[in-house]
Length: 463
Image (spheres, rainbow, N blue to C red):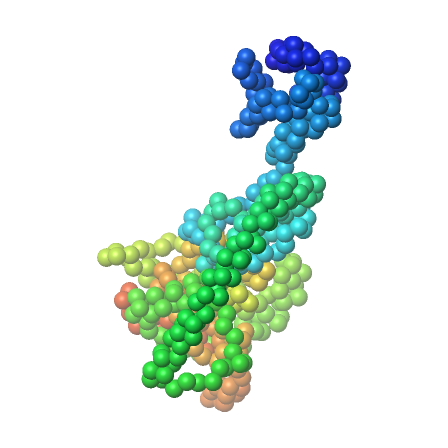
């Protein structure tokens, strides 16, 4: 109806129907687009989205003789109104920060794995977030090309934060900048005038510049500390969130707990003999190697069952006794110390423990371990012997109450049956919270570990 009204008005003014018909035919694509047309006697609007265009603008295409301009000019005019909106079909998606766990509210964007303009596949990692405990990948929600990153490396981000804009097709990503060229090219004439004004302003206060330059020297002259030459062989690197978290927790442990450490030494002869005798058959049946760590885990479980207070924790004015044994194992990685948990260690055999340790250690070194796999834990075992440590005083992992430290095996002269013989010996240390655990319970605990490791048959007979 609106187009008929326009035809009638144009015809009354002596316009050529043939020309106007051709123009309408050439602009049929624009008229067939999902635009909303509404007309009135005073003006007709072409409405799409939030933009409205008056058909009175078409009057500029009418000459003094009342004839319309060529159909190509009208067609190009209508096409210009429609073209900028032709890409509004959801061609872009946004990559956001995923949920990082109940206990983690934010993280630091460590690094980008891709660059703007590179193509990514769906679920492919484009960036990494470093949290207090683990490193989390940000995956692309769809296949396409990265248009731009909305954050920078080192920024603190929260779940739901938009990180990148990804175009589903390369064509859209290349077409987008072409539409912005006219906008950026229009204000080009303005800078020369501004530059002239700036140059005048900069040239005027030339005498004031020496005054500004003379202000820094006074503090240097008034400094009381000696001025040292610059240190060229130093590097300043920001502390990672994982390292910050470890530092904070260890310091809180020292400030909160009444730390005390007791020591003992273990003869590793029988456990090493057991391992050497059955390692081939153990691997053939279970598919994992028999290590010394599983023997100490089983010994720790037995000691915790004999001394339940070591497995307990202080909560305000109460003591919480745990009827389960979830043992944390300290694993050193290139990014820092992580402590995955062996859940239900009291119900596992040697093979189950070895398999769980291998799985958790592999995930920790690859950086794929989850937060749930490190949450909880009622007791920690740390093996500093793999690095060659002879003896140490480990620090409790809050909120636990004790930690067992293993060390390197060294052949030392020992008196056995009145004879001095060389024996493979290991120092073991138990650091405990003296507010909850007395020295007697701590010593009994460590003696139980020593007895089980030196005579593994006790585990079979439960004695």
